[in-house]
Structures are given as C-alpha cells and as structure tokens.
Length: 178
Ligand code: CO
Image 1 (cartoon, protein in one colour):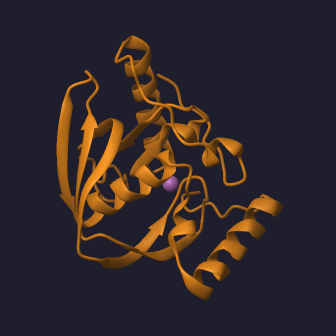
Image 2 (image 1 turned 60 degrees about the vertical axis):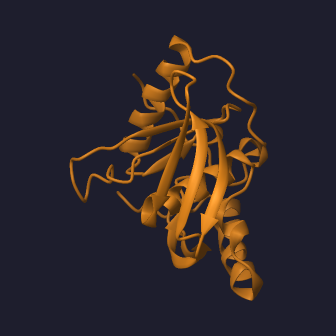
C-alpha cells in the first residue's frame, strides 16, 4: 500500500467526468487500498479517484474514519455510482481534501439513495442520511468534475469561490491537520 498525492483545486483532473469502471480486478483492489491509506493519512472521510489524478468512476467513503473522532471504520467502496433518490434539504459545513483549509456551508439532501457496483462489480443500493448522505453527494460531484464550492448559489457562493481561487493561485492552503 502507498499514500498517493492528492491533487488540489486548479488541477485539470478535478474537472474531468469519470470514466466507467469495467474491470473489478486486482489492480482496482490495489488502487482502493492506496486510496484508503491516502484518505486516512489526510484525515478525510471521502476520496474520489480523480483526486488522485485517475479517471475511474470510483470513490471511497468512511465517515467514521476521522482519526480525531474514533478508531472505528466503515468503508464504502463505490464504482459507477448513480444518485437515484434525494429527499429533503439540510445545510451544513463541508470541506474537501482538494481545497485544504476551506470550509463552507452547502445545502444537500437530507437522505439519498445511491445505486453503485461494489468492489466485485455486484450492483447494490446504499440508502443514507446525515453525514454519509452529504459525503455521497460530495463524492458524486467529484466524479462529475465538480467541486463542492460550485454547489453554493448566490453571492455567498461567489465569495467562497473567490477565496478558493485565491488559495489555489497562491498555493497557500491552510493545513487543517498539521
Ligand atoms: Co472533495
């Protein structure tokens, strides 16, 4: 296993729409292991393949992974995920490993149902609420080439994006976990 480098806002990989996963083989399993180690090292709770510069329609999520909170783990590995249902709305703070140090409120569905294929290619459904639902929305946005700051409407969104662009331009990312 190895820790991969996470690309930051401004990298073209983050703007690319993911390509479908068609082989659930050892190479994919190794990549998932590397992504898991990378996510944990960065104290993240989710990571999409394009954040490590790869085009696969693949994301991992573990909302219990934040080492500051617990040593528990509940890893979801999703290939070719599709949002099939959303219910309600809830506003909460969100951040991203590709925009270190920036946190902003985003309105997301309260509950979602996502269809995906697991690490063996088997189709499955994940029904989620709260932080897991939010993480699913965030990672699916990544796989569509979008960052969470693009999901904030109005003047507030403009201000958040301006701040993010400045951080990207200067490379002055705030390290949340020094
Ligand atoms: Co992110």
